[in-house]
Image (cartoon, rainbow, N blue to C red):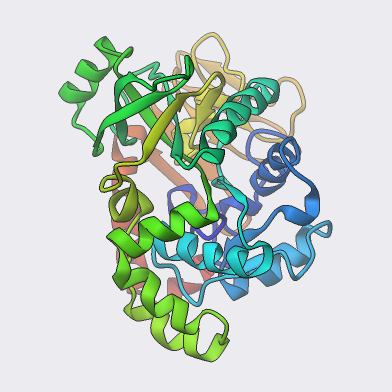
Length: 350
């Protein structure tokens, strides 16, 4: 899935060139990282990208190993359940039945060998008819992720568990409680594994308002464009996973981060002894600091010098300089919405 706008990575991420098409923690784009991850599991021709038509054009231009027929195109963003249902219908038509692995195009995962092993376990479960998700053992009291409460061990499998409940993004006190009970509560990675036939049955059982109009329209682009805006904009977690009785969780054996905001750079890139990090030229000595800590800097300037500042995010693009306290980053979408009301500023978001 590569359809997100990546607004929390503004001003690097723009509508026409969102963060999944950006190089964030390596010399490859986030999308290329995800494709390479998927190649551990299948052939290139079996990798499909879900996004809108505008983003499809940008991906074809910048990622030339992907062919035009490898897209599931949504007329507009309606959260994850509609695009997953649409993909399942296309795969049913093309392959009759197959194992699907749903990956987001903006995650950090390492090492890849552990990823491959975790997915092999999940695929084994999904082949038997389960809807499977990967749970990540929490390493901090994260309030930006949903959680999975682990149930009892799945009979016959020493690597999988029933899911007792899904928990929405918690407040800090609740997240600290989850961390203290990390053997029972896992981050919801948003990685899903199932057979096409099984996920379609679950949609028909729990989310007919999503699957029924898609079944009638998915083979006609004009009809699909007409019905898609009326389909409930629900995440698959709420539409299906929280209702299904046919679930399993496999604990992930790898390090995972959703790279959701600028603060993620401190978790996926090397930091100096004071927890400062720069995404820049890659040359030594680009970032110089004194009495400064826990700052995130994105800049291509030969030298960035910080004196006596803490907990800042500084992002420099050719046309925008963005500076924020880290504690204020949860207001970035509100700030962007305010700026977008000014016609003179529209060009900074395209």
